[in-house]
Amino acid sequence: MTKKKSNRFAGRTARSMEKTKNDFGYLKLPENVTVFKPEGSTEIVFDILPYRVTDPKHMDNKKYEEDAVKGELWWKKPIRVHRDVGPDGISLICPTTIGEKCPICEDGANKKKQGVEWDELKEIFPKNRTLFLINPIDVGECEVDYVEQELHLLDQSDYLFLNFLEEELKRDIDNEGFPDHEDGLSLQVYWRGKKLGKNKYAEASKIDFVDRDEQYDDEYVDELPSLDDMIKVLPYKEIEALYLGMQDLDDDDLDDQEVVDEKPTRRKTPRSSRPGRSSTSRRERETEEEVEVVEEEEEVEEEEEVEEVEEKKPTRRTPRTSAKEKPARRTNRKPREEVKEEVEVVEEVEEVVEEKKKPVRRTAKPKNECPFSHTFGEDTDAFDDCDKCKIWEDCKDEKEAK
Image (cartoon, rainbow, N blue to C red):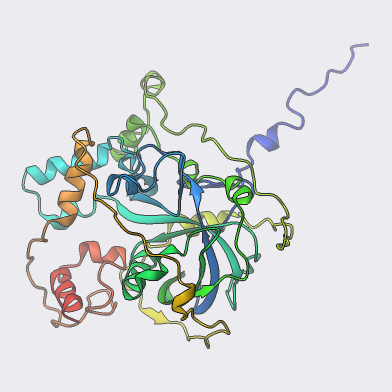
């Protein structure tokens, strides 16, 4: 009698099709980190936590040489994201984020030299976003049941959060020490909810700096994961293949191309408890719907109308007002001299972005009416529609005049 052999695929077939729970498009999250996406009009209190920099070409280090230095603590991770790439319209990290060459940006730079109009070029270049490690203290009436006092990743377009934070700091520069783990401040952010079709998003409309209930110790911060290790940067040739819509790329070609971020290193996960702070077990919420939310946050449909979500009442916390308790202002910051070996394509990207936009032919629409039903003179560059708007120049001028 022939002895029955064990099935070599038993217990292996199903698991091979499982999707990685911490794989969020262009992000690769540690097990202890959840994506935080504010939705609806609500007020949320959270701490922005510093992390130890691992990227020697951190974008903030190009501006000031004492900022975002490898091995030292920093508070944010700027990234550049190309959207709608290839036949599947995916979003991916632009390699210029880590000082590498990008085939998409190179194509845009070449077209610029050939005299291609900005209306076509702006579809090619990446969008600016910023990553933050945050600890939610009070999630208020947030539509999603986020767990307070647990580590989250805030991934927002600069237009929706960072630019507003910059304006708030200009009003009171003494608050700029807010990310310090030992002497920092909590952010009380009022988010104004908006809805476009099925896509919900929120933009910061008010930020107060409030005293923290508790600060953080060095040991806790040293155990935090690095934001630099949470991004996935595809190899040059793979991006080029996606951009050109190539489906069958020679395996040998890919083998010859070095993977920039194949296995990102990870720091130890934060301790489950520490003096004065309790921690609850994190609920599993990394679903496929969250993946789509991260990748499609800014994607909108042209003919949908923007609906303002009813604003909620402000919460309890009192904004920080005492001058005696404010962190000391940073001084003696010297702009870094130009780096001669800076990636050429990065310089060209920035040149195009900063270049004054060329005038375009007016449409038959009334002068002060947005053709995509957004708010003329207010929502400039807030939506992907703005990239192809023919009265973008008028909208921008109107916003700057306010």
